[in-house]
Image (tube, rainbow, N blue to C red; front, side):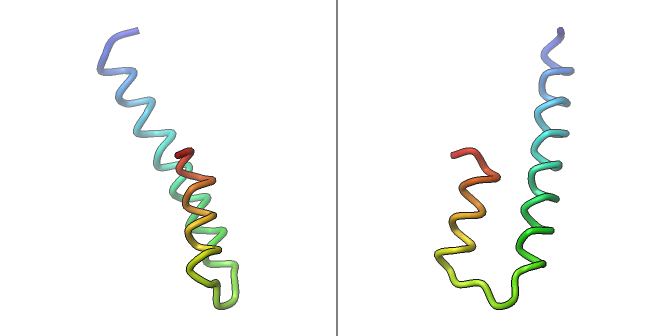
Length: 46
């Protein structure tokens, strides 16, 4: 596997996680900062 393909795969996975987090956040009615931070940490795998 080349470096380019690894970087491309990483970008694809990051955009997928971003889209899932965006959908989860959009579905919440008035989320608090703590909930938004928790979702970001879960989908960001920090």
